[in-house]
Image 1 (cartoon, rainbow, N blue to C red):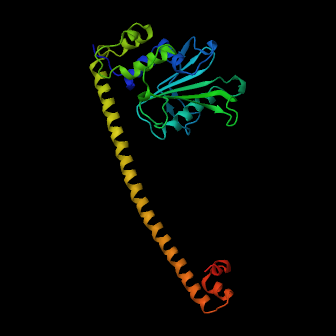
Image 2 (image 1 turned 45 degrees about the vertical axis):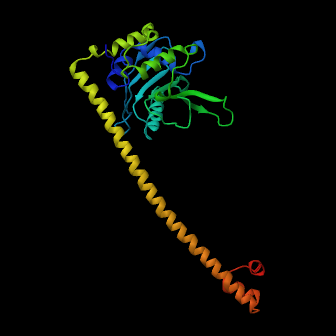
Image 3 (image 1 turned 90 degrees about the vertical axis):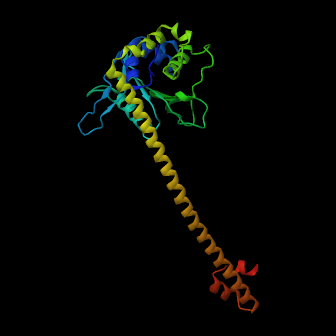
Length: 299
């Protein structure tokens, strides 16, 4: 039996965009909930399109958007590659979802929290070992003081390594589902098959559950990802080469300038020494060379 990779656009939306129980399980596993009352009981899907208030504003779309019965909103995104503009897009969409809660005449106190969960199939913090990054509005000096309204989470999937099931078991299972399935594995681990939510998700990504047109679209998706990676890799190499060339040129210019300056300083010192040996007044030597009286007295 062959399973398709759940990270592809087609499969990801099939699993988490059509089954509220599965996206609820994913969110409860991966969001930074600590108290029992924080966890999600029920979810309803919302339009993935974040329509602008006016035609002149920015239109945007996310992979999955939903709301629980308390009014909290949740955005889920699967991103295959990290780019510099992605984080700005995440912040923009999170803020937009928050501001769109209120209509004309509504009170600001009616707003609820917004959580943005972003699964990244790339490494963007190479110097940090952790794969889980949680951002919120926080007091710089007093870290225990923060606003709970906007919550943004990034998960670097390539860094994830399953270790133990003793803590946050479902987080480990969902991340294993996202990182192991469709990666040419021969068998699905029993612990994944034994879990009802993961087992259901596995059924959604079985190759037999897709028609020929969908499978063709699935293959084209990975082709586009490969092309995009090559494009960015070439752009980075070109940028690096250009930067190195410019750096070398600037280094040469800086070296020449420093050399000329050092030569001029040595010339002034030599002239000052000669004038001083001839008994020329210090004041006159200062005017002739630009050196200070203190510098000339040390010669």
